Length: 398
Image 1 (spheres, one colour):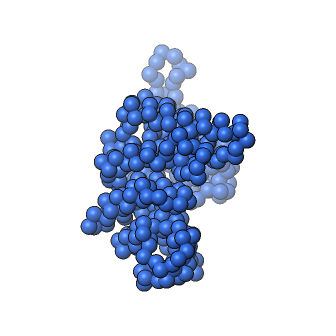
Image 2 (image 1 turned 135 degrees about the horizontal axis):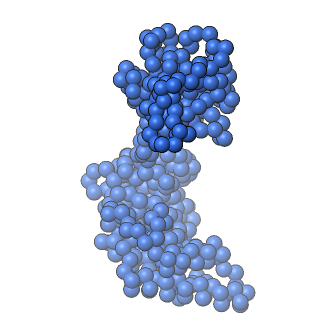
Image 3 (image 1 turned 30 degrees about the vertical axis):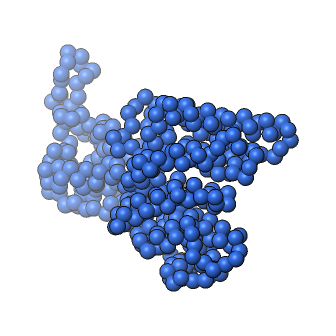
């Protein structure tokens, strides 16, 4: 006699049930008479119930120590553990089952077998073994990333990488960097960039001191901005890319950190410095990079560049906004509830109470300068102002 195990996912208003349906004999005309053999644990007669489960046309709860006759429609509530059964009706449509996914598993049982859970488990294993775990396995953000389906993007990406490695002229370099900046946001391409040590070192060279023959300061600034942007985009929200870069040999991680901090101290055009800050804020997520940043006195570099007293009077307000974003993103772990200890291997900035106070003062000074400028009719960078306000709240709230 075939016995079918099916898993039914009901609508949002129903619980999930696992149904074991056994079709054995035509539907009886009426329910069997109640057995006089009762199970009784208390003096209250209302708490008694038959030793053998008495099915009806409606689902009823099965007590743990009741015997279950063969041929019933049994269902298990996987959330509460409640077992229910009723008379089986062949080809019966269960409400809400139209969207279910059937397991397709068919079990063959002896006609005289009862479908008690213990008997079923002994023969076929537990429901959890058959159906798998109730909840999905823990999410891992370090996994294989499939290539994009668009072959045109793949062709453009690898052509740009090939051009980058070929010591191109300024025009071709600009074209390849522009292509890479657009594609590096995709996880697959970002991962491909991060695991190629030659590409990483070339990006560092191009955004530091590009060896390009050109009299155009504007062109050189564009190349520097794009190179830094490609590096930052490849690592942004891409844990696999960050891990790839961390595993590169020959101290490449150290070279990248040194290069980024050195560039922030150079007299670069503001838009280049903004892109370097963007790259630094994403590179800091690479395993080991935060420790290098701290040892390299990175916070001192940022403090020197921020120069709160000049806020509103120079062209570096956008850079100040980027620094503020860096502080907001890396000074407080918002995923950890307030009052709980941070993970042992924290990737957050280690800011002393005194340093935190100094930064809050500098940020507040910048806000005061911008407020005064607004009163005097001077146009300020509203985006930078909002980022600085967020940084003050982050530093004070951690």
